[in-house]
Amino acid sequence: MMEPPDGPQLLTLEACRDYADDFAYDDQQCRLRLSQRSWEEFDLSDAAFLLGYLHVVSLEVRYSAFPYMVEVMLRSKDWVMAFDDLVSRLRDDLRDSRIDLPLAHRFGMAQAVVAFLEAASQQAESLGIYESPTVIARTAKLWKGLATVSR
Amino acid sequence: MAAKVVEIRNIVEGKLERVELSREAAAHLISAMNAAFAPMKLTGQ
Image (cartoon, rainbow over all chains, first blue to last red; front, side):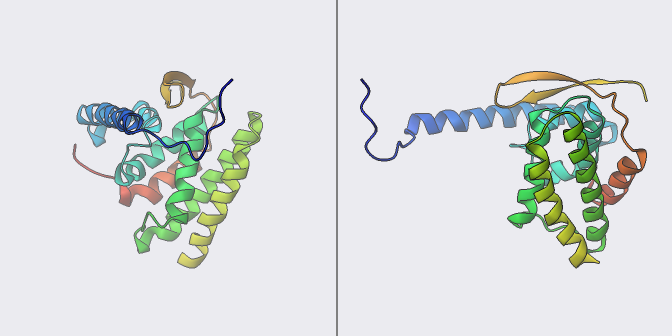
């Protein structure tokens, strides 16, 4: 019979190294793909690729590709995990003050994000995904707040 | 627009999921997003 752990289960150094290696590999894959594509020819396939690598993509790359990711999401017949990941990052970017959008464009950007999130919420519900709209609503509330103060 | 199939990686399961982009998306939403975020777009390689 297994003894219950006494005290918190700490990650070993080896385990930490494994996680770091995983992310390093993902980062390498992402850089490889981006190095073979130019922003001028960037398309929905590239956006779909980046959706699977959000954890290693910089904020600059993410927001540059954001309209394409939105299009992939809104046109998708199915709901995949990466869509929830994108919404969570939108939420965390504002909540944790990770981004500082250009003042002159902030209102328009916030308005566009809110409109997108409302459509995404309806889409999730229509696909029978009932957990995602809660996070989407929380995210939309934050971006609505940004739109209000930017007006 | 014709249906397009793209691959999106599921980071937890580490597999690629084929996703069909055949849903009707409001064109004004897409163009508004493109216009709003144009200043964020990186250029060059």
